[in-house]
Image (cartoon, rainbow, N blue to C red; front, side, top):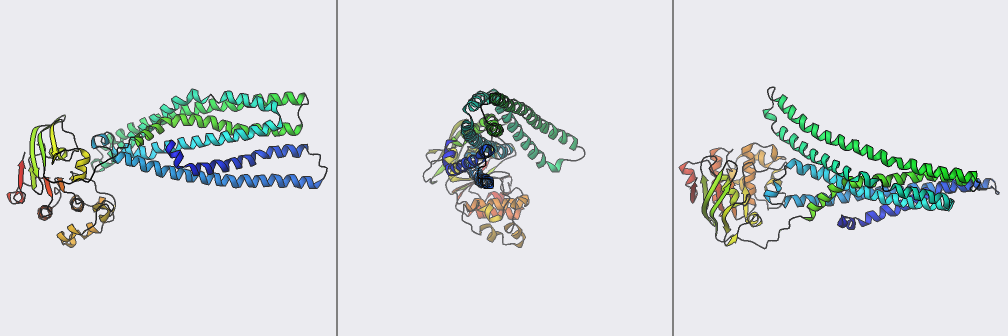
Length: 513
């Protein structure tokens, strides 16, 4: 968190400075009351007006400072959320595929929304601790000015009670993490069930409802367990108020009985005790809250600090891709010692029945999965994910189309220079709805594939690795798009189910599995 404190130092300083001004002004009010009560009013109405004016001026100063303090707090939250969510998103998208796929999309979504909100809570609780400590110091000074004996009793009692948060902090942190974990799982479950909407009917809905209910129960049970323990911690911490109150009232009663303090001092002290309780209780509650979210904060910060940085120089594909005796095994599938060579500028069609390994070979070429034995080289370099990601545009089955307009989709939000490649080639009003679309995620399967092929061509990557890119298009369009790809001068490696002789003749080489 240190780098975020440095980044936000202006907002933090502004918030704390004006909080000091606010608390000094408001804390002065009981002291003004004490002097008003003890005043002998030699000047009559002039003294009355004087005390009223002083009282009002301090209120105005306090309210103005409070406004600036709270505005600074909102700005602090805004800048913190922007910075940490941006950096956490960067950490996620820079993961390697095998690391990224350890979690589902819903879990990442939950972390960006909920877990990072926990980091903001941590920052806010730390700020509350500092603000409350300032309040305690200011009130302590005023109480000391009233009577040092009362002040000593209050200080000593308050100091002892500050150790209470240590009793509950670790357990609160564990229960809070459990809530966030179950929330991520529930988010995944809801996304998963809703994606299967078309399969839900009166025969299946009961089981689907039950599946949702079970996941919901686990999340809410974790939330209830956290809330119940947090309530216990709050009640325990709340006992502080009564401990300090009892000690303070006892010493005030003794001093009044001994005629050692005035009525004004007693009145102001009683008022200060109530005011003193609020920052003291806030310190205790905030320290407990800091402990509760500290685990979440540490995990998010660790993720950001371990962001994978990519340091590749300018790379260029010059010669060939070679797979040498590559093997990989899954639970129900094995690919054993396969060797292939793909020459720059040539086109390759990979055919075969489902389950023969077409997609697996493409994933190995693009380093979306790791091979267990053998070697993969690009030119004379060992292929790795970063090198392949730099040289290869990989289009898998079901590749994502963003819920935004056509140009943003095909240019990856302006990453690639926009040209009317596919639009000119299709040359038909039938496809204008695609190019004019404001949300390409709502297009049909075949229309989405047109968007993806346009993205592949605009990427200007030297190698296109395509897995069934035309499975949802009609045969006429498939042939036209294939010709456009093959005439691009790029190295094309494509898995296809189209085994018509005329179609396969368009490729330089056919690999049959």
